[in-house]
Amino acid sequence: MEEDKVILKSSHVYLNAAIVERIFETIHYAYVTYVPEQKKMLITPVSSQWFVKMHEPTQFLLKSRNLKGDRTLAIREILIDNDLDTTDRDLEYEIVEKTNLIKISM
Image 1 (cartoon, one colour):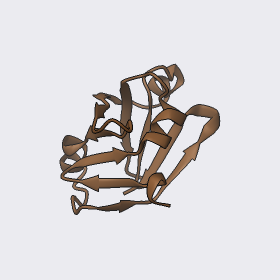
Image 2 (cartoon, one colour; image 1 turned 180 degrees about the vertical axis):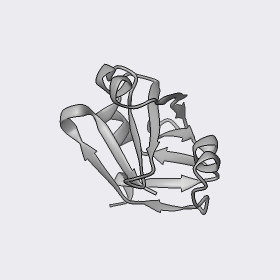
Image 3 (cartoon, helix red, strand yellow; image 1 turned 90 degrees about the horizontal axis):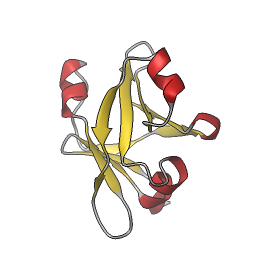
Protein backbone atom coordinates (compact mmCIF):
# COMPACT_ATOMS: atom_id res chain seq x y z
CA MET A 1 0.00 0.00 0.00
CA GLU A 2 1.32 3.44 -0.91
CA GLU A 3 0.81 4.92 2.54
CA ASP A 4 2.84 2.32 4.40
CA LYS A 5 6.10 2.90 2.59
CA VAL A 6 9.50 3.88 3.90
CA ILE A 7 11.54 5.51 1.15
CA LEU A 8 15.13 6.66 0.80
CA LYS A 9 15.25 9.82 -1.30
CA SER A 10 18.12 12.33 -1.53
CA SER A 11 19.73 10.84 1.60
CA HIS A 12 16.52 11.28 3.58
CA VAL A 13 14.34 8.53 5.03
CA TYR A 14 10.70 9.36 4.29
CA LEU A 15 8.22 8.08 6.89
CA ASN A 16 4.56 8.42 6.04
CA ALA A 17 2.00 9.92 8.42
CA ALA A 18 0.56 6.53 9.42
CA ILE A 19 3.96 5.26 10.60
CA VAL A 20 4.78 8.58 12.29
CA GLU A 21 1.51 8.54 14.24
CA ARG A 22 1.95 4.91 15.25
CA ILE A 23 5.55 5.19 16.43
CA PHE A 24 6.27 8.83 17.29
CA GLU A 25 2.84 10.30 18.16
CA THR A 26 3.76 13.89 19.18
CA ILE A 27 7.56 13.40 19.48
CA HIS A 28 9.61 15.35 16.92
CA TYR A 29 13.03 13.76 17.49
CA ALA A 30 14.29 10.27 16.78
CA TYR A 31 17.29 8.22 17.79
CA VAL A 32 18.93 6.56 14.80
CA THR A 33 21.73 4.04 14.67
CA TYR A 34 23.09 1.66 12.05
CA VAL A 35 23.95 -1.92 13.01
CA PRO A 36 26.46 -3.21 10.43
CA GLU A 37 26.17 -6.88 11.49
CA GLN A 38 22.44 -6.84 10.71
CA LYS A 39 22.68 -4.34 7.82
CA LYS A 40 19.81 -2.51 9.51
CA MET A 41 19.14 1.06 10.49
CA LEU A 42 17.19 1.37 13.73
CA ILE A 43 14.89 4.34 14.38
CA THR A 44 12.97 5.03 17.58
CA PRO A 45 11.50 8.08 19.39
CA VAL A 46 13.83 9.90 21.79
CA SER A 47 11.52 8.79 24.59
CA SER A 48 12.97 5.25 24.28
CA GLN A 49 15.56 5.32 27.06
CA TRP A 50 16.42 1.62 26.66
CA PHE A 51 17.68 2.36 23.14
CA VAL A 52 20.41 4.71 24.40
CA LYS A 53 21.66 2.04 26.79
CA MET A 54 21.90 -0.60 24.04
CA HIS A 55 23.21 1.52 21.16
CA GLU A 56 25.08 4.76 20.66
CA PRO A 57 22.44 6.53 18.64
CA THR A 58 22.48 9.93 17.01
CA GLN A 59 19.53 12.22 17.62
CA PHE A 60 17.74 13.50 14.51
CA LEU A 61 14.90 15.94 13.93
CA LEU A 62 11.82 14.48 12.24
CA LYS A 63 11.14 17.18 9.66
CA SER A 64 7.58 17.79 8.56
CA ARG A 65 7.09 17.25 4.83
CA ASN A 66 3.42 18.06 4.30
CA LEU A 67 0.07 18.66 5.97
CA LYS A 68 -0.71 14.91 6.01
CA GLY A 69 2.00 14.45 8.62
CA ASP A 70 4.71 12.72 6.58
CA ARG A 71 8.17 13.28 8.04
CA THR A 72 11.78 12.80 6.99
CA LEU A 73 15.11 12.11 8.65
CA ALA A 74 18.28 13.47 7.04
CA ILE A 75 20.58 10.45 7.36
CA ARG A 76 23.36 11.43 4.95
CA GLU A 77 26.08 11.13 7.60
CA ILE A 78 24.98 7.57 8.49
CA LEU A 79 25.00 6.59 4.80
CA ILE A 80 28.47 8.05 4.27
CA ASP A 81 29.99 6.81 7.56
CA ASN A 82 28.86 3.26 6.84
CA ASP A 83 29.48 3.32 3.07
CA LEU A 84 25.82 2.50 2.33
CA ASP A 85 23.97 2.66 -0.98
CA THR A 86 22.54 6.19 -1.39
CA THR A 87 20.31 5.27 -4.36
CA ASP A 88 16.73 6.53 -4.05
CA ARG A 89 14.49 3.52 -3.41
CA ASP A 90 11.74 1.91 -1.36
CA LEU A 91 13.16 0.39 1.81
CA GLU A 92 12.10 -2.85 3.44
CA TYR A 93 11.24 -2.32 7.07
CA GLU A 94 9.74 -3.96 10.11
CA ILE A 95 8.01 -2.28 13.04
CA VAL A 96 8.44 -3.63 16.57
CA GLU A 97 5.29 -2.24 18.23
CA LYS A 98 6.29 -3.19 21.78
CA THR A 99 9.36 -0.95 21.72
CA ASN A 100 8.32 1.62 19.04
CA LEU A 101 11.23 0.57 16.89
CA ILE A 102 11.51 0.76 13.11
CA LYS A 103 14.11 -1.63 11.64
CA ILE A 104 15.06 -0.70 8.09
CA SER A 105 17.05 -3.03 5.85
CA MET A 106 19.84 -1.15 4.13
